[in-house]
Length: 275
Image (tube, rainbow, N blue to C red):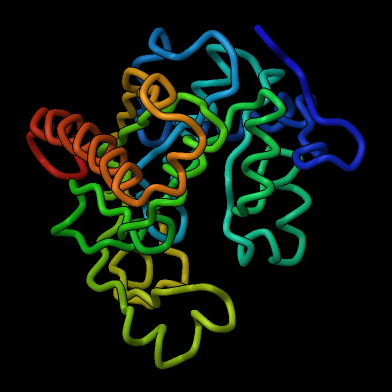
């Protein structure tokens, strides 16, 4: 397995496997609260580069990434160069950015993402971002990327396979009542912080609160399934990243695959939250 890591000043060079080994027991405890199960590691390519695309769920404290990563480190080790894209607002919080960068966080930008993949790394992306992570309760079992297609262009430009990572249950750890897109627009959050939502959520201990106030997550069982890789490079070259029709076709293929998987996983849950 390729265990290359960026060095000195390169994108992702702050990632520290020793740090991951030290904090993993804490994250394992967090994941165990959700009775976490991650399936499909046998479908992954043996090494990078490849792009993992997931549906983002769980509101203010989304558990989907910690659940996936703890299982990943347990199965494939902390030395494998795995990175995840994060919103610049989150990485800019005092005391948060440097710690997350040690864990493999990379600011979500074209150059940063391409640098990781062209360097042979593995990149995890949740394209739906704030739009999907705060989708209303009634949409909890829907893939809602909000027509964000940048990840398709990224995969085509770098010619890497895409692994869909579909999770169910994470969006039952709280109840989102509304995204609050109009509130975000009125407050100018998009212009100031690139935030398109200001949601209203229901959860302990405070009841109904705006999305900026954390709630204690409900103990919903979370299952993640890693699907068969999709390799668009077998049909298209890097120039296809600029072809709108091809990009749309790839986007529809991946989201349809993910929705079919999510429908199957959701059908196996008899009761919300209990799983």
